[in-house]
Image 1 (cartoon, rainbow over the protein chains, first blue to last red):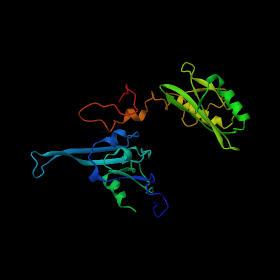
Image 2: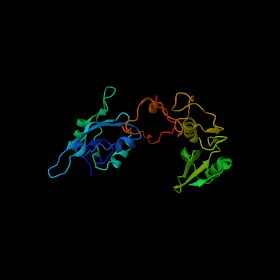
Image 3: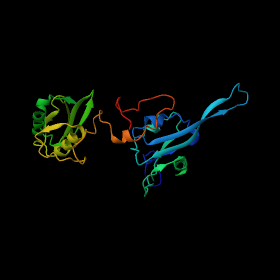
Image 4: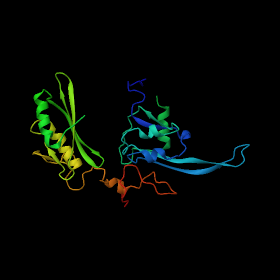
Length: 115
Length: 144
């Protein structure tokens, strides 16, 4: 499958995040050879109806990928057990200032909605 | 891949060139069990056959004969392999650094070499409740 510009949909253009699928397990952060992923999370207790005691879940606070360091190897996409990371073919996101390639949750999630 | 004795490395390529393998594809090095292996590939464009050759470098000598007098195209690859892995190519006249600014300091492609960036930046994957070693970093890695 290709997008309108003729680039395959799975091309290594940018990494898109589905924050709701992320469990903050840190596997992508630890496996990244370029050390370009950082995430912060905190634990919250969730009480489910009918459960005997509350369950502890990790809630994602921040998730950043520095595309200035990223070497587009795709290890993070491969190792994510919850498919929270995905390749997107968009490549046109050059930045004009230092640190401009550091993308947070909002930017990384925005790639999901792009054609 | 064929393993060649380091002493016969250049002779082997001289013979391959005579047999029509005149296209020099690439030369690089690989650190296998803390020993360096030099790998090179040549192609015979007429019958589209290729040969991939490797030789284990004696760690005490750290050198191998240059292929530059046989294949002119080997110069660029040998200059790069020399500065990245610290291998000395005997007979390579052009020893100017290719990608590094100078040849001072440890060769960056050796597994024992810790990059400055790895010392300056804390590992983002460090668990809060226990100490863990990042992947691909030597054991006595010093964090500044």
